[in-house]
Amino acid sequence: MKTDELHKSTVKLAPSILSADFAQLGKQVAQAEEAGADRIHVDVMDGHFVPNISFGAPIVRSLRPVTHLPLETHLMISDPDFFIEDFVRAGSDSFLVHWEGNSNLHRTIRNIKGFEKRVGIVINPATPAAVLEEILPELDLVLVMTINPGFEHQQFLPMTLPKIRRVRQMIEQINPSCELELDGGIDVTTAPLGVAAGANVLVAGSTIFHHEDGVATAMKELQAAIREADTKW
Ligand code: DX5
Ligand code: ZN
Image (cartoon, rainbow, N blue to C red):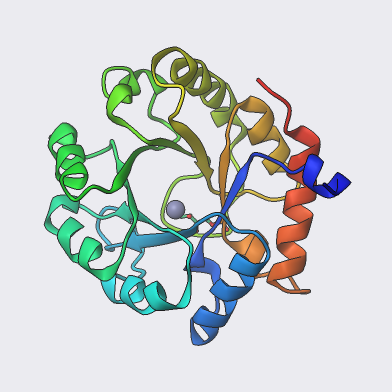
């Protein structure tokens, strides 16, 4: 085994295609896969739940045949239940649904599990970790937003770090196989902070797709930064 492999990080990277060049989407996703991405993060926005519009199930359908990676679908939309089946048919492998604004979250989770897909709950920066406690045994993932959702290339909010540590503790106590993912403002400086606080999956959009030397270089730099911080909590 090469030294590189021995020190391989257990932290997974989920490039967010919101920052990709849509005219070259297939190519850029292939580059991310080649560079070691674990999954592709697909940000769906309806201009209502968040003040921005992105794309819907057709993007998932187009990407499905061009990558082997799981397509993780982050639904920033007002009525996720209406659209789950569309995304499942298009090829989504997992769903991230927000705690905020969903008065029947348990039903949404059951709906997703009914399609035998992985499911995670997302909490915004102002939402406390405590809301996860009862539902945690049902989850495959928790995603802590480290920015307010809606736009790429925003600044990581350090106020989320104590919450990330709390969520990690809750996961260890209640459901240790649950993943802890962060989304927003992840770069070579903030990624190690998030990992040290307990995250094991990081979404990154602009850091990966806006790098002037390309996707592969960006992924390498991020992986190197994470390796440094990847000790056990
Ligand atoms: C924002 C999205 C994020 C976004 C992250 O609402 O959920 O996934 O693409 O972009 P960066 O990594 O540039 O902050
Ligand atoms: Zn996202």
